[in-house]
Length: 379
Length: 75
Image (tube, rainbow over all chains, first blue to last red; front, top):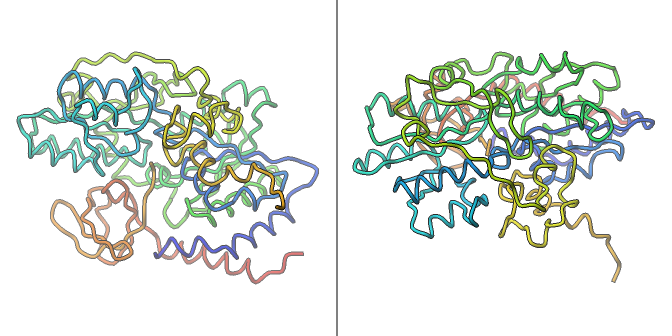
């Protein structure tokens, strides 16, 4: 497929790796965080970790919307289906995330909850049009990539005057999450999680542009290189980060110029601003309460806000006591350091959210990396 | 979750919607967020919405840079 296959050429990837091996300073270590789950997935799937020099280490970040969604938000969606009789429409990604009382959206569906997997908010609107006697709630999660489509969906519902449609908004913001990581004690007290730079978001940046990262590149002296999700994009971005570190620079650079500009998509930004405003605080799994890190539906669209419509109150719920998702999302642990990894917690029976989404650090390592951990023994 | 795929726009429809082609698969999507997109453009499709467009010149520039790297000898 055009604009995909060209960016998966293994020979070029190995050439970039050769260049990197020449350019790294053998006397130092390089630790870079890939914020996005899409990059985490690419690094595992295409064997990028193996191509990197030994002193370049990638730390998986919290940029997987399924992984950072706290249990309490999924409970809200489940209760809407089971207790309020609403049709809950959700992206497939959230179906298997473990929630309270041993439930997940999939299990709640088995108990009779009318939970339907949709590809798009537009599909949820279709259901609301077809079943006007039922209440339909769209469970909207995701970063800035997914937020503008939700805004379009809500505006469409308003234009059509749909009375039986609302949205449970769980959209979160990328720049505030990165700032929160940089402010965390693990990073600030240099040593536990050293971060020398960031591979910056791909599709989030199509929407918001490269501009929003300039503040923390300057304030925290951390280089950022925005990269596409294909393996050559990731390799090239890591090489660009190595060069910035070697030169002592901390700039925002853009490897993904074929899709990302400095200003982002003005129409998408305007749609988001019309429909949503910033919540004072929002709970992220692994990061806890993060100030100004999520969106809620504005007063003028209150009729489409499931939280107002059903007078929902958020209740925080603790994760499985042995699940290390929180520490993994902060970059302080790796999947194999979790006791549950690969035995009780697998993609078929996930205990924590990082094993649910294919972009989660645990699922990516389970699918593509776990055999790397086993030494090869000749028969 | 942020999966998004470059797809060729083959027909603009009212709505504002469009028909796109992705490796032979055709799908109707919303183009409300990319009002400038024209037939023949590659739009980036995420959850049934085009969220951006591919700039073909920039894509060529990146590929040319990879091509040059392949030509150079690594010491």
